[in-house]
Structures are given as structure tokens and as C-alpha cells.
Image (cartoon, rainbow, N blue to C red; front, side, top):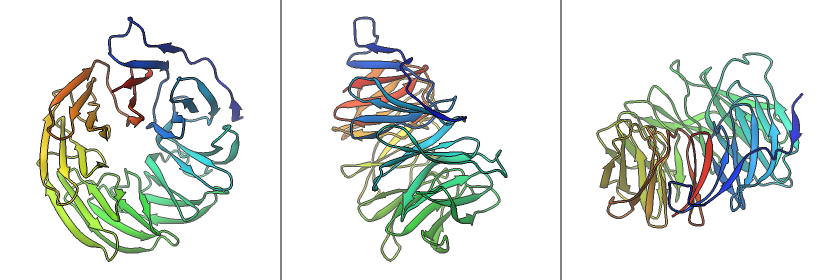
Length: 343
């Protein structure tokens, strides 16, 4: 039986001379398998044995934990409503909706059929619906209050391997075969689209535009209103992350270990940096005049956002999930821990 559990077994360590890194605030033991998000004062993430966590971002102390039963993947989604909710997805197809404040169960979606069809990447929320993609090549829209299926959209045979994005009544969804879809969020009907020459990563919405990147090396911007293409730039290396956007900059990671930074207005390439430490599959972070990247081979690199100059390196193991940043602190999962580092 799945149940609410308050867990205090995570080991919390505070910065001391024993740490190899400068500026480490705290570390906790956690086998993190999802991306980390920050909402108000807490981090939210999931682990390999199905625990969904809320952890205080300042102290690293566990606020609540709930065991959903299956490995947590993708990106948790927060929904502000009469009752604030957070939704976690499991690799085997389950979805758990919890009360954001105390971690109590609101609903759980466990499809009896096709339980082995994994949920891919993360999720999106809008118009009272929760959107997830699965490896049966379908996008599912579920009612956020009940978990009941409202509609499904069937993608191409090669599958849907990244999540959708929501804005203004529309769903934006890239496919592994390079097709880019724009769907009506209420009905799932395809109303427009485009494409690229390779698999498309999770789209990102910013300033009335949708941005998407592809394994063919392209990064594209489209104005949502009237669906007007704005620019397309090829960085000449397979892009494997969703675009990170902040302060007029776009950063993407590539399969060869590059981070490439572009101008948000026209897509011109401003600079790139090669980590020499494996694919940059974790989404970069742009904050406080810096760009942080976390290659799969390990280490965290802090770069100057204007020039790309290397400013600092934090030694750590391999990183596969997206980090998060707030109030001058970077949070990332590596070596069976979450580490909080002041910049």
C-alpha cells in the first residue's frame, strides 16, 4: 500500500573543512532520479525507490516524503489551485498527485493496461489538465483533480521521448522523428506545427514565444500568436537539452560536451564552451550573470554568462538530472547526494 511517510533518515551534512568544494552549504544522501524543482522554500524531487520528497532549500531538512512505489522520473509539476498540488510521474506509468504543503495523497493514477509503458521526461499543466508523454507514442491529458483521462494524442511510430509545454490554451510537443506539434489543449486536436531534422527536445515558453532544440543541432524560435517563425540557428552539434532561457540569453547542451549560448532576440551564437567531460544532457542554468553546466562525466562548471570564461569548477561525479538554482545557490544531484553550493 502506498502511504505518506515522514522520513528523517536522509543524512544531512553541513559545510566544513571536510568538503572538497568551496561554498558548499549542505549535502543530503538521496538517489535522485528526477529533475529537481524549487517552489517557494522547498526543493522537490524523486528517487529510485519511489520516494517523493520536499526538502527545505536553506537547511536540507526533509519537510515530507511520500512513497509512490515506482522510480520517479522527469520533472515534478506544481499546480496552484484551491488546494496546491504537486504531481510526480513514475517510470512504469504511474502518476501521484500530492498536497504541496504536507505530502498527503490527493489521487494516484495506475493504468491497469499497458503498465509497462514508461512515462518519458516530465510533464506540463494547464487548463485544469496534466499532460504526460509515454513510450506508446501517446500524449495523455488527465484531469488534475481526479487523475481521469480526458483525451490522448497519437504521435509517430518512433515515439514521444520528451515532455510537452503549455501556454495560452496550446500544447507544444516535439517528436523523435523531428515533427513539432501545436495542439489545442482542451481537445488534443493538432492545429499547427513545424519540424526539424532530428529528435526534438522539450519546448520552452518565454515572452510569448516557444523555443525548441533538436538533435540535428538546430535551435528555433516561433512567435506563439499567429505561429510566426522568428529564427533558426544550427550550432553544428546534436543538441540534447531543452533550451534554458534567462536575461535575453539561451543556453543549450550538446552531445559532444558543449554548452552554446545564443541571443534570445535573433538566435545569433554569442559563445560556446567545451567541457571535455562528456555529454551535457542536464539542462544548463543561467542565473546571476553566470551559466552553470553539469556534464554527464562529472563536475559542475561555472561560466561567465557574457563571455563564456570559466570561473570555477566543482569536482563531483556524473550528473544526469537537471539542477536548480535560487537565491544564489545551485542545487544538483550526483554521487548519491544532493549538494547545495553558494555561487
